[in-house]
Image (cartoon, rainbow, N blue to C red; front, top):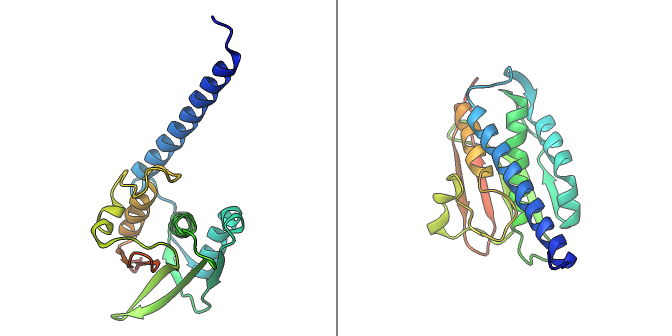
Length: 189
């Protein structure tokens, strides 16, 4: 009523941003609730193809943050829901890129290794790392370590759920200031 159009524009922008954030959150929660109930047909797919697709989806963030990505070359064929496992890699790479801190040469490595006779995939970064006391909480719903970071706090909970639905497990090895490595396995079908 006072004719303060500047404040009106600021308020509308804030409302618009809040609406967009809520929409993203609801979409991510819906995706989380669907994992395990609504599934795509599992198929034999090259893990290399999964990594390539995931990297294509986060290419903008990687370029913006000048993150170099090193991808292994000896990936197996996996029997999995391709779209869901692509989401796993996409989320892990996106998180790694977000938490590089002031790293001069940000780098992410995606590869696999044999551990206890099982193929173990990993996404490793040289970012800020995660303090020990937060490492268990990180897979919890809405457990964001940085309240100022982008995202809803659903991403790693979704990643964990997808891996578990595939008969696998996921864990983290990290030291604050020395980057983080997310390891995961997939069941046999």
